[in-house]
Image (tube, rainbow, N blue to C red; front, side, top):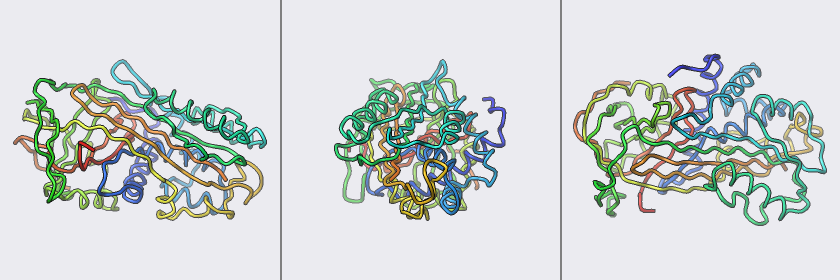
Length: 383
């Protein structure tokens, strides 16, 4: 798969996004629950906001997102990412950025121009004084962009009538496996949720050729399951210990983890794979996680978003939320996410059967950019 032309800039942003995402993942998700999360969606919204941030607010955003000092790297990278992260003949991949400024406020024209140019943002002035109509408008936009997979992103009463602007990123993915599973071979198999709980779950089966390696540093087996066209890949991270997922996730968010290990899962051989079907929907309070990561100015009156509107301290971010979903079945996967920000080792080849019968993590990676678009965990496929 060919890489985009400005590989250096995209790689810098992708690497920073992955590190940011794993750390945020552990801070916002309940370790005992199924979860689907798009760190790219969050990073995209925050990166867009960073173009209007100044002073310590900008410093905090750059630190948490692992952004370089040179702003042009961010702009060049997202310009390329926006142009290449789209559907092709094999998959559906749609990413949209929206800026909804209040009709009562004039946003900085340079911020709007940059958002359109580098993030391909859609800009729609919105009357937030009519909160019900504003919520309906925002929900319709997200629903349309995610093919009705993310509904009711904004709950009744969730929008302040004095909102200055709402920034939204929506992402939708649908792909079929290179090697589809035969639904007639799907049967109920035990899945070990916890030491005291085992459930019977619909489990897919196929004797197929795919890459899988045991990674000693992570104490888990990583399986690479490509989608048609092989531009996108789902990685299954199956802990060696039946209930070792928390330890694996802790290692993923540590500075010692190198995400390029995924690129080394390439040696294929034929072996049986048992993989449960699952469907997950999640809603996350991203603000709480960002505060734990060290972002504070953005959420109080010391905030400097004067590059977005007004003077330093005039506006701040009141909430950052994300809703996401994924469904994995015999045909392939369908996933969607939307994030909104409101302003006020050593690898050994594995040849024996891979039986995914206990809590595991997963990721969906775009091989053309190196971005991990979705990540999550399955603790109980039936929940």
